Each structure stands twice: as C-alpha cells, then as structure tokens.
Image 1 (spheres, rainbow, N blue to C red):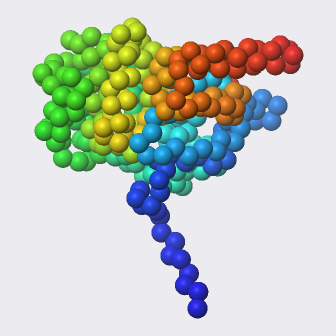
Image 2: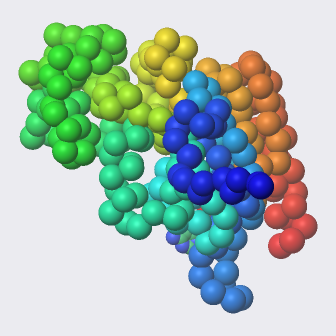
Image 3: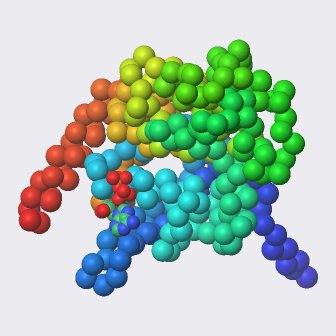
Length: 265
Ligand code: ADP
C-alpha cells in the first residue's frame, strides 16, 4: 500500500534554497494601461550566497526586491523564503515573518533618530516580541566595528557608521535572507567598500544570504553572482566576475535596451 506523503509546510532545513521564485509576475494598472514590471521570474538562491541584481532603470529591480522580500505581492507565481511560501501568508503572518526571518538594508539607512544605536539594533527583536538580547546587540555591533558606539544617537555618526548600524540591525535576528536596496548609494567609495566588505564577511563567516540591488558594477563585484534584469525578465547572469566585466555587460544591456526603445518609439 502506498503511503500518502503528509502535506506539511517545509522547514528551513528541508530546502537548500534561501530564496525561490517561480513564475513571478507583477503588473500594475489595467488593460491598455497595464505595465508588466515582472514578466515571469524563476530563480533559486542557495543559503550562504551573495547575489547582486542589476539592470537599466525601469527594468523591474525594485519590484523584484519588494516581491522577493514580501513587501509587495506578485500578481502571479510563488515566492518561497527558506521553504516557506510567503505568497500564501496573510498580512499579519507576513509581517511576523519579515520581522523574524528577514533583514533589510536601505540606501537611506532608515534608523530611528530618537533611539540609541544599540536600541536601533535591538528593534527587530523587540518588534518580533523577542527578548531584547543586549549581549547579542553588542556582539553584532562589535562585528561591524562599532562596539564602542552603542550609546550614541545615529545623528552623531557618519553616514558610513550609520549604514554599519543598519547592517548590525539586519544581522541581529540571524535572518534567513538580508535584502539590500542600493546599500552604498549614499556613500563615498571608501565607505561603500567597508559596507560591502561587511556584507561579504556576513556571508562567508556567518552563513548569511544577501540579495542586493545595485547600479554600481564595483558593488556587484562583491557578490558571487550577478543577475541582469531587462524589461521585467532575467536576461543574463555572471558568476565571480570583475567590476569591469560586470560594467561592460551592463553597458551592453542598457544600449541594447535603448536601441529597442528607439525602434519601438
Ligand atoms: P527599477 O527598480 O529597475 O527602476 P521598477 O521595479 O521601479 O524598476 O519598475 C518597473 C516598471 O514598473 C517600470 O515601468 C515602472 O514604471 C513600473 N512601476 C513600478 N511601480 C509602479 C507602480 N506603483 N505603479 C505603476 N507602475 C509601476
């Protein structure tokens, strides 16, 4: 007699994938005004990987990140994070999952100015109803080189230091995935390198998984793999490539895109 397999939600250990997208589409507007921001994305990113997402303006990078991180819902398709189908969750469960299992780093740091650095780092634990583990906050602040700045306010720190706090805040819950949206967009080259090096170290030493949208080939070169989006689809990818090679590929993609747009116009 064949035993029917029990239908249970897979646990993180059951899947090697931190992020899985299957047939993800996202459209805005209706009928003639419909915009297809994502036209069917399929991908699987393993735990402990660093992926960069690049593409011309309007290619769907932000929409991709928003859908992958559960900040927006796809029109069709599924998104799984460490085995959990987040497209099937209601708003409350999705918010819980984002707080407990995802980390975010934004271009504009998004720290709360009225809280100390340590309180900012502890915020994801507090919001998730977990014990505000101060030893853990100090540990992650130490890892990002701010062990002595826990009692400062964000406004007393430089831009690079504020982004380090944001990285510490993203790491504090030991999330399944860290989503980074142009994390170095507001920083000078030296400071940007420090932040990318921190993300790289989080992947290599802590087993973190990072998905980063960037327009900067030198930032993307820190990733294991670069995915190129054009017109809502993944059209190309590079692994272990130099900034120069990534830059050339991106320029080619942008000029191809412009030529197509020129033909259509
Ligand atoms: P990128 O981040 O690569 O610049 P986006 O994901 O922001 O691209 O946008 C992809 C496409 O979807 C663009 O054509 C954009 O105009 C459109 N779009 C994005 N958000 C919305 C929205 N809220 N309403 C209508 N169209 C949108």
